[in-house]
Amino acid sequence: MKIETRQEFPNFVGFVSGVDLKKELNDELVKKIDEAINKLSVLVFRNQNINDNEQVRFTKYFGKIEASGNKSNITKAKDRRLSTDLADVSNLDKNNKPFTINDPRRIFNLGNRLWHTDSSFKKIPAKYSLLSARNVSKEGGNTEFADMREAYDCLDDNTKLKIKNMICEHSLIYSRQRLGFDMTRELSSEEIKNFIPVEQPLVRKNNFTQRKTIFLSSHIGKIKDWIRPDSMCFIDDLIEYATQTKFKYIHKWSQNDLIIWDNRQTMHRARAFDDLKESRDMRRTTVLGEEQLI
Ligand SMILES: [Fe+2]
Image 1 (cartoon, helix red, strand yellow):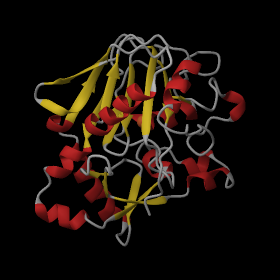
Image 2 (spheres, protein in one colour):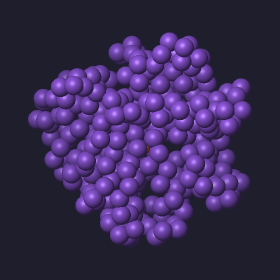
Image 3 (cartoon, helix red, strand yellow):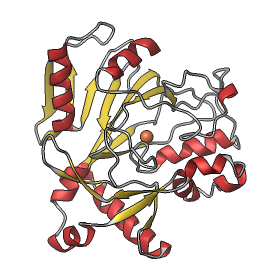
Image 4 (cartoon, helix red, strand yellow):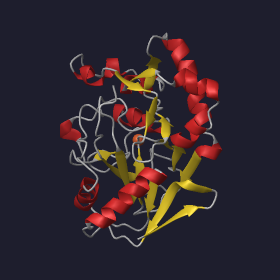
């Protein structure tokens, strides 16, 4: 296995070659990949023509799989295209047809265009995400990643002090509100209980590298002990700061790319494409986090 980095960003994003994810991997190789994720946050594997089972097997080398279901999406079980081991981040219904313009599932998925970390709205947030590009759009549909460790390191001392013990409330309801999508109207009072906000610290530390990181996401709707409008202004300023070009990597997908990223120390977002006409089949597996942070 070889891992190359970009000259000007030696600690963010690695390009991996010499690994075939269709095959089983030995413990030593898995350890090296795991260490590289901790250090580089994003790993890109090209030309991995894998199926769902192979993606699931690879994911399980890094921990337990976070099941995709009614706590992370509004798609009903009967309408799922993929097994619950995979999160379907495509624009496709179970007949592989693009969602129509007003389909609530399409509008819900538009939330992926906002900067976020996966499952920060869960009590135990996700560790890694693995996204496999089975079919890509001809134009657009890039994914952007931002390095939250570098963003933390570059903060001025006053802001570091201000956010040191800050607690934020995360929920899918908040990120979807930003799009004008009111989940409380789309879901029953029973279903909406799956999306009750959870508290997360704004600063966390990677125990492997000891680097601090800003645990930031568009799922944040409130800072503890602040009123919501002040919270939103502060968080939006911080997201704008943390996603400057100097902290960012833009990935232009090719079919059969697979990317692993570390949700504990990055944010990401999907970019627009002609989703009413083109098919973009992207399948995500998620490694469950290991710890509740509060
Ligand atoms: Fe995501």
